[in-house]
Image 1 (cartoon, rainbow, N blue to C red):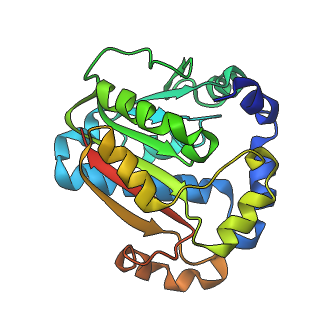
Image 2 (spheres, rainbow, N blue to C red; image 1 turned 45 degrees about the vertical axis):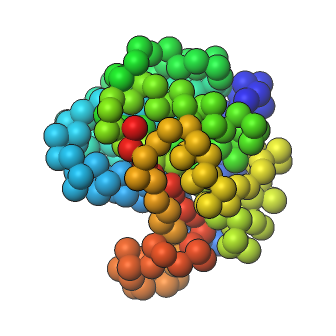
Image 3 (tube, helix red, strand yellow; image 1 turned 90 degrees about the horizontal axis):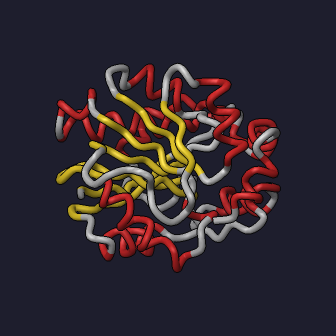
Amino acid sequence: MDRTEFDRFAEEYRSLHQANIAASGEAPEYFAEYKIKDLKRLVSVDVPRQVGGQFLDFGAGIGTSVPFFREHLPAARLTCVDVSLRSLEIGVGRFGEHANFVAFDGVRLPFGDAVFDGALAACVFHHISANEHERLFAEMRRVLRPGGHVMIYEHNPLNPLTRQAVNTCPFDENAVLVGARTLKGRLDSAGFKQSRIRYRVFFPRAFRWLRPLEDLMGWLPLGAQYYVCGRA
């Protein structure tokens, strides 16, 4: 993970992201909230007590997810980590009262073992070299309590519109998309259990009346994004 690469885009991250996803008809916050709603469903159905637990946002950037954690998991305590110091500075300025922002050296998360009830990485791992994935997943598992949830959200390389968006995005210039089954295999190799794949984000705003169907379409590998989840 190259800290300087992420620092370079920190100031204009939101505006670049907004321009890049214009075809969807939505703002970046729509996609951030979508992920937190999925996380809430995952942890509250399986282990209700975790709704008020400790959560890790791995690769949190400028903290776009923070207000949606506060809205949908109001009792949760959130820690945001990132290698980009400038992104963390911006995140503190925006949401410092609502989350703890911590620098990550890209090697070892600065926490003890079994600290968190859940961990989310939202479209982070396509920026990280494939040979680092399993090691970082194992590091995430180390800081999760036994039975804690992990949710890794990623762009779906099987979706042509997603590929176009990534190929034309300035901060994705060095990104390498990874397929859902490949990512699931790496999560399994890192020691996570009960892992599964769900495809997400099927309809742009122009077809938002169809979005209630998306919860029934998680098996269909055509969504713009997907997540792999598992238990520590």
